[in-house]
Length: 208
Image 1: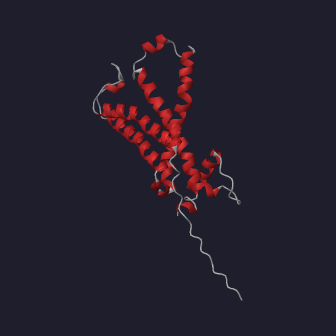
Image 2: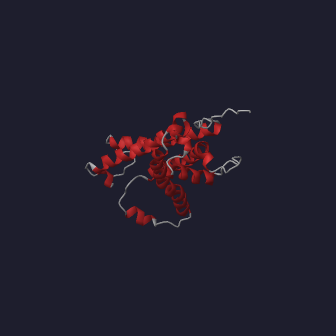
Image 3: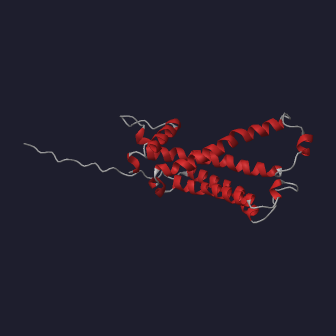
């Protein structure tokens, strides 16, 4: 009688996607795009009035705006950490549930800017916005260049993070939705759905 030796299959941990030229460009773009906002916030926390016109409510004394600037500075600095998680080998070992909050917060904050700011510029260019006299009579808040610089940086961050998240999720959670044959690579839509399933189910077998 022939005895077959039992074969033990040891699950392997997913490794970070290979840092190709495209991914390196996205990493550089995401990191560079954080600099304008971080620089402005750090300057405001330090007491600078850069980009803040006379009469702005932001110049009123008090602790509130300093705390708010410190919190939002830390939030944008988290983009740097998120970029590292999506590109470094140790990022594959981060528990799935830890990624839920920063990913969904980033999506919720950046998506309206990505969709709304270009539309606002287009409306203004077509002369369909608020009357110039109305804007001139209103109380100033920030110099107009601040919005252009900061929101442009946010848009670049959003595009870069999305481009980095798709290969990360495909590598980490691809087995959850490839199907029985396991031959077809998931689409970007499938990546998002599979990642959501991974978070909801505690990360699946790939995280253990």
